[in-house]
Amino acid sequence: MNLLDQVKFLLGITRSSDIVRRYFVVNGFDGALTMLGLIIGFLVSGASDLRVVINVCLGAAIALGMSGLSSAYVSEAAERRRALGKLEEAMITSLQDSAHGEAARGVPLLIALVNGLAPLAISLSILLPLFLDQTGLPLPIPPLYAAIVVALLIIFLLGVFLGRISGVSWLRSGIQTLLVAIVTATLIYVFTANSE
Amino acid sequence: MAIVKKLVLDVLKPHQPNVLEFARTIASASNKCRVRVTVLEVDENTETIQVVVEGGSIDFEAIQSSISELGGSLHSIDEVEVQGKGQDSQGP
Image (tube, rainbow over all chains, first blue to last red; front, side, top):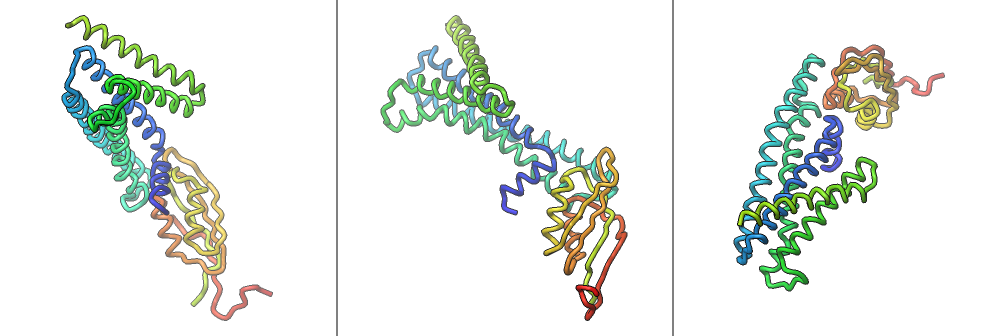
């Protein structure tokens, strides 16, 4: 069995595929909205030094990734240990050397990786226009606006993904998540612009 | 050495992996053997199944190991058919 099949098998016997998917969307959405909020905050504040913007956003992205990684691992490891204990009780035997034991050790790690890497990867994608601008690559629009466009696009795509797995209209689902992002952006703009 | 031609096993297993996955794994562990799995009883967390393995030469240890790896527990060997060395495998 290759690694991918093994992962699928372990997710299957613990019925964790939906948890992984949920964590990816929830924390990915967190990452995208956080970056959107930070970038709009910098735009409203008139920040001119892009290095400061990148460092602050990168710091937040790493913190989101580490938070997702550690919190998911701790909670999922506890849940899996509990589930394995219940199963061992029902089977009246130790399952540590079985696929269930392997799943109890491996699945929390996998879920933690997804939970941590989703916001980190999405945040880095949103910051890509800023990195490109730093390398001297000319962009058609200013880098902060380009980052906002990327953020809105990713949020829309997360909605499309949700729509596809739930079997509802992908367009409707994408527009729903996009609306959440627009409302968030408006709130940030209203509160930060008024506080100046 | 006698060749094992048929085994009927009583196994307790968790609900996951399901009987199809269970049967496939046992079949892949026992080369060129036919595997039939019947669910006898279903409880909250476990199910009791009857595993029938038939074939040319059954490797009992490999089957037992597969059952353990999948989280199953072999309760009893309910039926065995073996063939002694030199016996005609095709019968009369």
